[in-house]
Structures are given as C-alpha cells and as structure tokens.
Length: 333
Image (cartoon, rainbow, N blue to C red; front, side, top):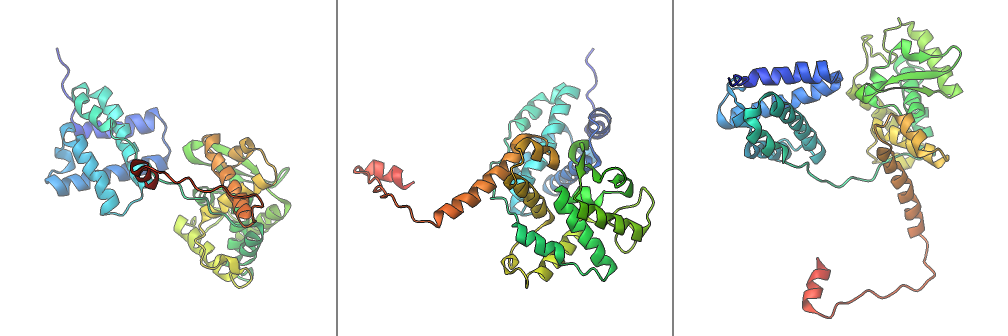
C-alpha cells in the first residue's frame, strides 16, 4: 500500500525542526538564515501567484519559479550574487530533504537541485597597514565610558581576528586572565577556539571588566542598556574611530572599513610575520585552509603593486598582431 503524501507545510516544519535542529544541530544563525530565505521565497510566491504558504505544494516550487525568485533577489532587492547563492543553498538543502521524505516530488526536486550557484568575481581583500591599525586603535576617547569600551573592543578585534558576531556574543566567562591570557571564541558552525592575548590587550580587558563588574554570563562589550552590542553598533563605533583617526592618518580618508577589515588585517599581518597558513586558519576559525589562501593572494597583490612601480630594465617584447580577420576578431574578445 502506497504511503500517503506528506503535506507541504508539514514537510517544511520537519525540515527545520527534525533536519536542521535535531539531526544536524544547526546553529541559531544558520536556522535564522534559512528561515529568512523561506520567508522571502513564500512572500514572493504569494505576490506572484496569489497562494499563501499553507496552500502551497511541492509542485509550486518548480525550477522556473525558483529561478524567477533568484532574479527577483538580484534585480528588485539588489542582493549580491553571494546573497543569492546563500538563499539558493537553503532551498537546495530543503529539496534534498524533500526528495527523501516525499519521493513523489522527485521530478521537482531534481530540477531545482540542478540550478547552479552563480559565479562572481571575488574583490581583492581590503586590509589596513600596521600604521593605520595603530591610528584606529588610538582614536577612541578614553575619557568616556563608551570610548574606553571601544578602545578595548577594537584592540580585541585586531588581536584575535574575531568575527563581529563572535565579538558581540563574547561573555565575561569566555575571558581567561588568570594563569593565561586568552579568549574562548564561539565561531561559525559551532566551532570553538582559544586565542592568546598580547599583554597590553589582556591588561586593557582586565581594567575594563573591573569597571563593568559584570556577572559571568554578561556581555564583555555592553551598550548603555547593559545588553550586548549589535553588529550595527560595532560598525558604528568603528566608523567613529576611523573618522577620528583620519587627521593623524590621512590614508584612511575615503576608505570603506568594516569590522571584517580588521579581521583581514590580522590575517595579513600574521602572514607578513611568517606565520604558517595552517596556523592562521586555526587562528581565524576557518572551515577550510583553502579560505585562508585569499590572504596569501592579498599579500602577493601588495608585492605586485610595489613591483609595478619599478621600471623593468629588460626590453619589452612587441604585442602579437594577428594577420587574419578571424584571428583579429578572436584577439579582440
């Protein structure tokens, strides 16, 4: 006897509860990202075909509609190709689950799973020189409560190369200042790592924690209300520090500097100091050492830029000029 077909709404709920949370143990950030993808998808479908999410079937999510949704993200919502691919990854994950739970939907799931991620050019990594980092770290006004916090926040960000999500989630109990000076960071994919601290960073953290006198579960970097800073809050405080540092360091003027720029700077400076790529990968909590190779490319780009400013003493060979019209066409592509 053929098993009854599972309802679409139940399939989606099972995917989030059974698959993501219970079976895979996905982090809250992963669950939120997938949830956002499906809320956007269901909102688009309801506007496009007039069907509410609870009335949908697997057949409604066929490849042409998914492709239209992905175009909608880029054209109407002005999302980047990276964001488009992240939404598609969430849909693909659901389709793989649906193919097992609901074999009758195999035709739909197969077509959607065949939609490829969009390729895009990776911009060169932006990072700050040691002099620029020093100017930014010295910029916060330490005569104020928020200035003292910002100074410690930026020092910790550069010392550890932590992601902004790791910084705002940092609690007092994650700071180790007794026998050793280190931070216990909780990164992407539930990966944990312990990063040592310079003596100056440890001293600044110790002084800051004495000032806030917080409980073990309290945030290391609170806002005025005593709750953890937000990602946008960290970005705003960094913007203020950069603006204050510009008069002393004019090379910062007009630069787009984000908290992730500090993370890139840590990686590049570790590389310049001769640190092995595998160690940098562990330091930053990368899922794969291949990710860390982008910093090697950034460092090589700096060397190439320096080389380009020098005159090549050798004679430059003349450019090849095709003598055939078809070859000329191909050469001009």
